[in-house]
Every structure is written in structure tokens, then in C-alpha cells.
Image 1 (cartoon, helix red, strand yellow):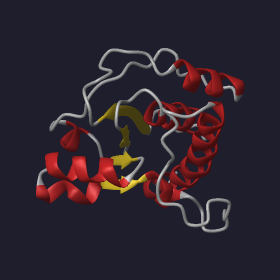
Image 2 (cartoon, one colour):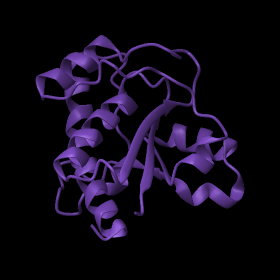
Image 3 (cartoon, one colour):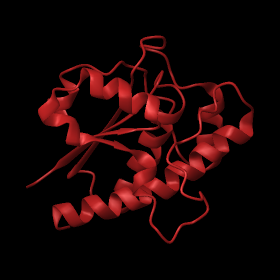
Length: 165
């Protein structure tokens, strides 16, 4: 049976990428594709290796029914480019960091999460990046969830078609 693997990537792997991972896991479960779509997250930086997601991210996720508390921060490695079919970054800064680490032949695996927002969802006015909520208040974490929900919904549809499921 064909599978596809996705790794969500932000700077420290404690806010945006674990949120995207939690949302995607939920959507994949609802779509009954847990055995076909493998999901992980990582950071381009090494500041939070082994740490749980930011408490504000966990709280915002819990309020919407997602549990990200068991996730732990890790840093992207060169092996991830062979391991994952898609490395989905939250912003251009992470795209640049991934491209520096990635073998040139695999750079087509790097994408921005917001590319997957369905065209009919115009709440984001063409926003290309998921906002970084780390230095803000709880509203930023809610916005990250809004963006992840919109984009992950589109990503599940793309992957479902790719898998023929």
C-alpha cells in the first residue's frame, strides 16, 4: 500500500510546526488515512530539542480539541530529506534554511504550508506564511490554528488524490 510522509517545519518546533502536526494528525484520522499518511514535525533551530510545545500553543490546541502535549521538539536533519516526501515550512526563513541543508535533487520536496489553502478560502488574502506567535499573545496562537486548519484541510485533499484514496 502506497504511503506518503510529511514533516512540518518551523524555527524551534514548539509553536507552529507541532500545531500543524496536531491538526494534520486529527484531519488524517478523520479521513481514515492514518496508515497511509505519516506525520512529524521539526525545527530548523536547536533551541528547544526535547521540549514540549509552548504552553500557549498547547492551550490553544486543547481549546479546539487537539492534543499536542506529547510532542517533543527536534531539529531537522539531512536524513529527513530522504525520509519525508514533503517538508512543509511555515515561512520563507525556514524554506531558506531547508534549502541550505537539502540535497539539490530533493528540493522539490520543500513547500510552504499556506500553499495548500484551497483557493476558495480567501480569509488569508494570499498570505504565504504562517504567523509566528512566539512573542505575541494568545490571539497569535489562535491565528496559527486557523491557518493550519485551512492549509491542512487542503493538504489532506491533495494527498488523498495522490494516494488514490
